[in-house]
Image 1 (tube, helix red, strand yellow):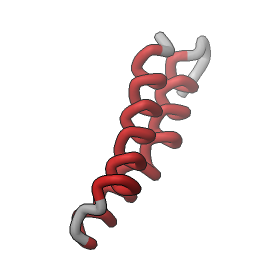
Image 2 (spheres, rainbow, N blue to C red):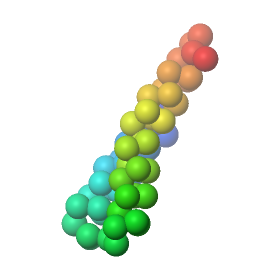
Image 3 (cartoon, helix red, strand yellow):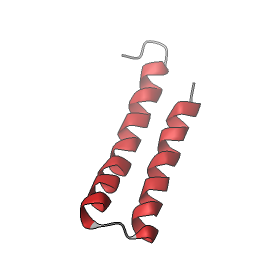
Image 4 (cartoon, rainbow, N blue to C red):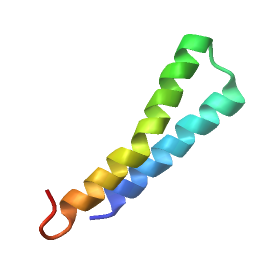
Length: 55
């Protein structure tokens, strides 16, 4: 139940590391950073929806 949320957080951290250490081109870097920033709210939403009575 919590594994997908944890995997989303790991994906976000991996994207952050890619932006920091790989120095992608600017447009790609922004897209990766945006995707990384979106993963914590997605993981939280996933976890809340899986709780009993979650919406």
